[in-house]
Image (cartoon, rainbow, N blue to C red; front, top):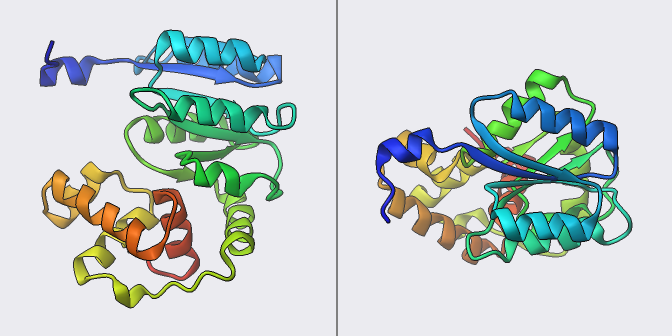
Length: 223
């Protein structure tokens, strides 16, 4: 059945939270339950149960504690991305180290949020991801940039391989714009934006739009 624009606008986001801290995940689940933009919210601290919820609910968003038992966060992220309709994923952390960060970037997580930010900002950033943006907490930007440099230090990338329009799209990616927002900002069709993003990733050798955004920010290629 086709979804009308009205149905799309009234759709509530389904979220699965997989986090080892009972206090944090229960408080986060309650925060989302109380917001009109969210519908089903499931939470657990167990990797296998988290995967069951993801498979059963086919959520719009999965929020994952980056520091679960070794490998568990990556497993949950990979599982969410392998759905028929891949979920958006936000990695949550209370630290600013770079361990395992690049693995999550390569698997195309859309968000990196610190558990130490204020509640209104946390809720705002979660909504931004749900609406198609890539978000990174300011306190995590340094760690992600360091991890990116360490992982790709030997890769030679030349911005001049991009067309003028592709550079414009990359600048939009650098500040976390969604494809829809990029199209509106540049006055081009959504399908055209998607083609430009695909070309940027291929020409520059990026694994994801998050990688592209980090590279662009690090080099001042931004709006």
